[in-house]
Length: 144
Length: 258
Image (cartoon, rainbow over all chains, first blue to last red; front, side, top):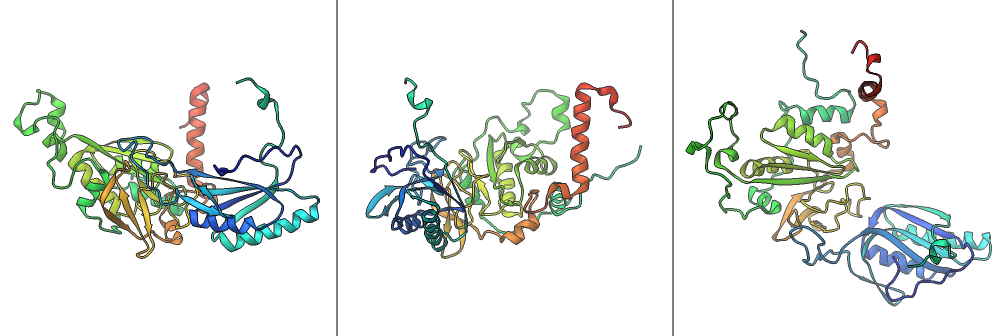
């Protein structure tokens, strides 16, 4: 999930490393806010995408269709002074890093791990790789 | 012919034993909580507490039934006697060691109750019964050991969540948040009925069980719990059915001595 207020980052054109963090539990909105604010101060982070389970704003089917859902975790959080509307119960982060070499990557990873260890109570798995597209492919050139 | 004693389910591992217990109608299941009948009625949302049961046909005692040998043979359940509507309750069971899972619910329902229609899906199990019988069964099923406040959901529609990770309080995910965590009492509280219409009062269904307790109560085989392959008899039973139906399908002459 990307923030509504920010434009999507342009393609870097090169496969910058991405850190995949999958949490063992789905996180409350407050925890996501704390994690993001802890990550926000780390230099070299190009963008953060989040994923999780969708929380609809309104009840989307059944006899209660159309009623407000009033889910306590569907709310606006504040990250680095900006408002981000959470529409998911977040369970994963994809952090794209702009680094020059492996040494710098390792340094950033340590900082990211420290931020996560402090804020994610029930643990997580962390991997480095490339999990999203970084350059246009055939799909991007097809006609509508 | 040898008189066999009904085994219900093969195996001697913890999940296998639990399956046998839940299915055996002679075993009285432990009552772990007491949710008031009126609250059960509210959570199901088919009628208001105290309201009369709506009927779809006149009471059987009025004698307007056609002359039918089967109708004479079968003793009607209470709801059928009164001509009640058929209503439902649907449970969602988490894969994280919920006390029971949908398929065993079907086995249990059919083994323990009369006059029910049940349907199994991957994460949920619906049971349809005449209304007044349903209420009695629903209360039993919410009160007894097959229910866990955190890992069993009462969800009439949009059941998504049984295979999702739990949330930070250990509750199964529900996009409609029919139940919330009460941090003061450390209990699970229903705030919406099973189709997510807000309730006019909060209904507590008690404290979730500890994971160590759930692992003793569950019917779920899992690699990080009891692996199905570690229970020889269960494995052989699965393999035997697989072999017989495969052979029966395309080389039935090879099925010998069964």
